[in-house]
Image (cartoon, rainbow, N blue to C red; front, side):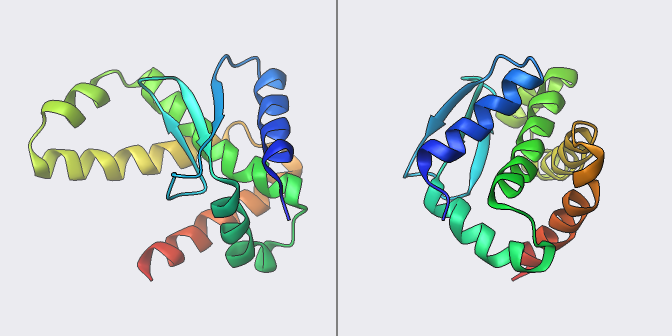
Amino acid sequence: MLYMWNIEEIIKSILQELKLNINVESSDKLTVPMSYNVSTNTIKFNYLQINGYNGKINFKIKETDENFVKLILYLQLGYYLEFRKNTRVLKTLIYGEEKEKEQLLAEIEENAWEYGRTLVPEYLLKAYDQVRELDKLLLKD
């Protein structure tokens, strides 16, 4: 079981290692394990959601709890990089047409996984790719 303070410590450690100035916040209202909010430059996490997601996915990839948190953090950092590199994203999400927003969200998701992968240490690359594939299957259900 991962506890709030463990997860926060792991996130802060990776952010410090990567020299990224991003806020970290726990939220029991978050309906996903972890998310990045571009407007507040904050990574939020829900430790209950993380533990549930860990239970659904980690039995297949068999990583430590700490590495599992890192894997889902790298995806969130991918969102951070996507929003930094692609400034039109926010404007389109706010003012764009529904079809345009839908297409952009799919593009953002794909790019976030790719950008996040560039941050993943070599020893976790296979597990990151497995989480990505398993996540796609979970989204279909």
